[in-house]
Image 1 (cartoon, one colour):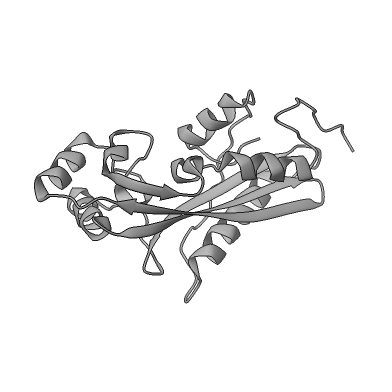
Image 2 (image 1 turned 60 degrees about the vertical axis):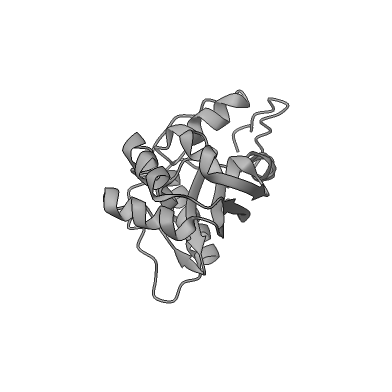
Length: 193
């Protein structure tokens, strides 16, 4: 089961041949005071997985939370077009981090990890920022861009997992799910406990 409503995460899992039931967790994602970004994404992934796992002890639950971090600050999703444009300007010509917390639960086993990818935007002209905002892609996206779409044109360099920037680092996901008895690459399914 996937504790996320993200169509990007479901599509990435489908590439590996897994089409899990989608059941998003409904919880407050507000950062705690002075909570570090890596701690935030790890906590939210774990909390989402635990919220969905209640009463489903034999099911494998996967959850994730992805945030864009610049200068130690989580940017979040834009409130509107003006906010999206401001975020894009703040990322232009600079590097930032994309952090994804992952959690996999089955029965009493809870495994978590955090994956970090460094992304560098090229310098952007104001007309490019305006164009990208008009595409509508920034809406609902952490950091106001989508690497899997037209936002790829904004990125000069990437160090780490590309699928992490899309929202689900596949190599880490495969490893985490193996830890709770589900091997996406061989098709081995967990047996009920």
